[in-house]
Each structure stands twice: as C-alpha cells, then as structure tokens.
Image 1 (tube, protein in one colour):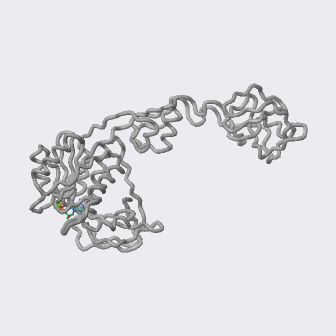
Image 2 (cartoon, protein in one colour):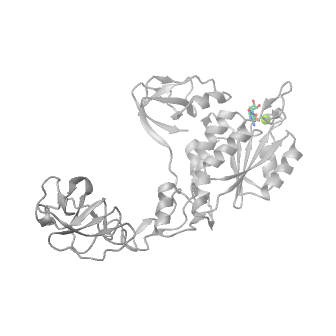
Image 3 (cartoon, protein in one colour):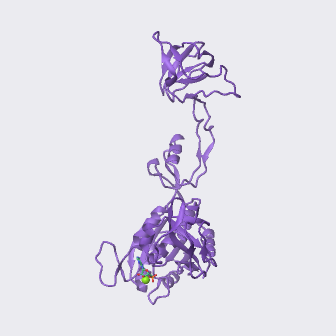
Length: 400
Ligand code: AMP
Ligand code: MG
C-alpha cells in the first residue's frame, strides 16, 4: 500500500508524450492550446476612436466647430483636423490627423448652422503626459505590439482565447490530441441503466459517471461495456480496449473478493503494477499499472470511491497526457461545523456543501452513497493522523 502522496508522485512523474493536431476555431472550445498565440500586428492596428463623437483639438473646445466629414468604422479619414474643425466619428473608426481627442456625442450640441459645440465638463487646454486628459483615442499598439506573445500554450481554450486566436487570424489552432480512454465496468450484478433490474442486480452508475468525468477532464471516452466477473471475459475486453486507447479505466474487480480478477488479468497482459492500494478513504483498492505508454487505473466499484479517486489521481494524469498544466479547483474556506472521524490511519475525503462561503456537512453514509455527491459542492480531506477539523478552520475544498 502506498500513501496518497506516493501515488500522486507516481502519476506525476510517469512519462507521457502528448501529441498535437489542428482543429477549427468552431471546435476549439475546451481543447488544450498547443501553440503560442503571437500578435501578427500591432493592436489596435491604427489610432481609433473609443466613442461615437467628434474628433477635434483640445484648445478648441470653447468654440463652435466646423464638421469636415463623417468617419464611419471601416472607413479612412480624408481630412486633417485644423483649428476650429472636427470630424464626426464612430466608435472603432480611425482618428484623423490633427485630432487630439474625441468628445462624446452626449457632450455636444449641434448648432443651427451645422457647427458643433462642446457641452461637457471643462478639460485642460493642453494635452501633456503629466496631466493626460481622457481623450477617447485608443492608440496603435496600445494593447499589443506585433510579435508580442499573448499565450504560450497549455491553457484550456475558453471563449476569450477563441477571440484572441481570431484576432491574430488563426483559423486552425494547434491543440493537443485528447487522450483516448476506455471504460470497463466489472461485475455480474450490473445492469445497464436502460434495462430492467432483476433480484440482486444494481444499475451500472460507474460507467456513465466515468464517461462523464472523462469528458469533463478533456479525454475522449470509449465505453466498452460490462465485463462479467470472469477472468477470460475480462481479459478479452482488456485486449479489445488495448487496441484502441491510451488508457483503460476498470471499475470494480480490484479488491479482495473471490471474483476480483482485474490485477491478475493486467499482469497476464504484460502490465506492470505501480500500486494496487492507496492509504485513502474512500478508495483504498485503487490500482495503477502501465505497459509502455499505455496506462490503466483499476478504480474501486463503490461509486463515491471511483468518483473521488478519479478526481484525485486520474484527472492529473489525463491533464499531463493532454499537455495542459494542472489547475485544481481548490478553494480555501472556513468550516461552518466541527468535522470529526473515528479512525485516522488513512487520508480521507468527505463530500461537503458550500453555503454563503462556508463549508457545511451533508448527509453522507459512505462510499456507496452516490446520491450524496449530487448534493455536494466539493470534498474536504483529513490527512493521516488528523481526526478533528475545528469549526472556523480554513480548509481546502476540492470543488466538484
Ligand atoms: P467491487 O469493487 O467490484 O467489489 O464493488 C464494490 C461495490 O461497488 C459493490 O457493492 C458493487 O456492487 C458496487 N459496484 C461495482 N461496480 C459498480 C458500478 N459500475 N456501478 C455501481 N456500483 C458498482
Ligand atoms: Mg465486483
């Protein structure tokens, strides 16, 4: 048996080699960026107006201004602004030469002779850097200079990153290939959720749960089905999975029961077992094995154990295989209650609720109580040797 920290260390140091592919911008959301985003031009690419208004000189704000032209977004100014002159300008349009500021349309009045007067608050008459007036001009290169690196890669592409890619004209970003992961549920008692239950059977919740967790962590799940508690059948399903995927997840069949064949089957298939139990609760019978660049987790059959050990150990490895830097969803919050446990030999996790920024107990009966997870916002943990967490103590919550 290894400690959780030892198990995590093994997962964190095993060598992985993420591969790359390109995708379309439309399909980039949620993928891991595998390239740098470099500005291909200054941004903005020209001095432009941040407001709908009039572009003019600072010294002219106390007199009626003659309107030379109207500059729409996408157009280019044809006139230089001289004394007593202005150009009507739209947001995003290039500012004309000679203009020192754009006055907002809301701060102006159009006179009967067609000239425009400034009606806003008084501004200084000169524009120096020490007393810079808000001039509503976004200058060329103010946001980025051509060649600036916006992102270095390794981030999960969100809508803002999609926008940055579009801004630099990248229509087909390079992303890391999603690791393919097979899910095999084991157990004679299992029935697929759409089938009717017979006496002594239960619904296979781990299969769909693990597929969902894989999708959430950025992997490509391949659901293989239920392997009966039979060594040959389990071995056959493993062989089938090994031909298709980078990683295999078993649920069940890894503990000490008479029908727990997974470790044996893995060894016979040439896998090396790195650990076969971890000093955690729930999830002690968690196994990790590798064969070359192919990995396998044997997760406990109990749904809460499978869920938590996936989050703690499988997700970090999937992150590494997907080329992305691990960002845990941990937040530090105070405990609203005292939390106690009777034994302290294993590192244990329990589901909790977050209410008004504090951590609350929820009803939780142990590792089979999957519906408790649906009420939970996250987990807190008791390290080995700790059996009491005091009300008010700042505690890490791993958010679900
Ligand atoms: P095992 O690890 O195979 O001994 O299973 C431990 C417990 O988890 C047993 O009560 C099983 O019935 C239950 N279990 C195993 N696999 C699943 C599954 N796929 N979905 C829901 N419960 C399961
Ligand atoms: Mg079983």
